[in-house]
Image 1 (tube, rainbow, N blue to C red):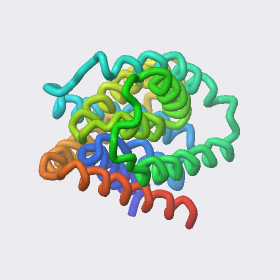
Image 2 (image 1 turned 90 degrees about the horizontal axis):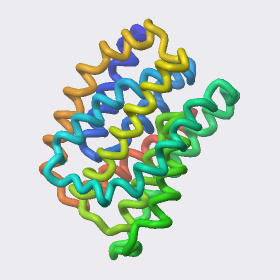
Image 3 (image 1 turned 90 degrees about the vertical axis):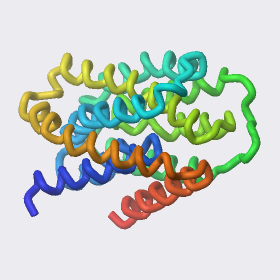
Length: 239
């Protein structure tokens, strides 16, 4: 199988996961792509393609978007995302790969945690912390989901409200990441062209995942996310 075919399969699987769970594109795509392409190239590809997937998710929950709930997470993530993208050239490759593994395992731990009742009755300061950590790792590795997922669990939201907040967060930080990659020159034309070609299968896979999502209960939604991240953690440890 050619390298392009492998990358396309990874992107399709990531889009399907994102559509079902509301997050996970970066976790799965980065965890798999770093085995096939350089980490920095994978970061650019995933940043561009995941934005298309995030926009698909945003459209699927547009009627449930509450910017008052999303803003406390999104606003602190903006400077953190900028810092994460700008730090990429100065971080050793081995450290970047270790960061990929850490965030996958963190995502697994987060989704295994199920508080049941609402623990957080107000957004701050937890939203600030989730936004800062998520933005930093999202900017550097496209893997800023776990802190935000943990925040939504602690707020006790159902699957639709959780997905709406996460979709706003991923779209806002995704637009910023892509713009920064282009501005810094990390997004070369060959990488942009490849990413644009992968957008169509990624968005179609996300749309299919959204259809599956509508048939899931909130409990099944969490189980799906947990199963995904356990498999990712096992893959990283095996690697």
